[in-house]
Image 1 (cartoon, protein in one colour):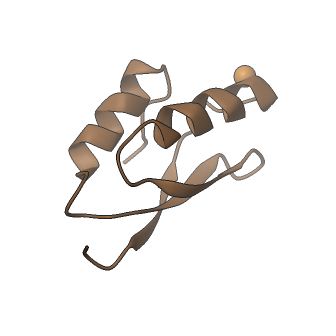
Image 2 (cartoon, protein in one colour):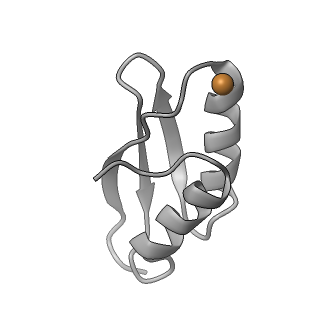
Length: 72
Ligand SMILES: [Cu+2]
């Protein structure tokens, strides 16, 4: 297993607790993602993941499909 990486992404469409739950559930369903924390005020999400098991493109696609595109 590779060293887990921690990343913070900007998800500007997060606006309420329902969004927080949707984003958290979406990310938790991805392989190896743990410790999902959504900051509703900053509109960011941080989590740890294993880069050998999931890649950032898949993560961004999953969030996009859930209605929360990642801001670049
Ligand atoms: Cu919401």
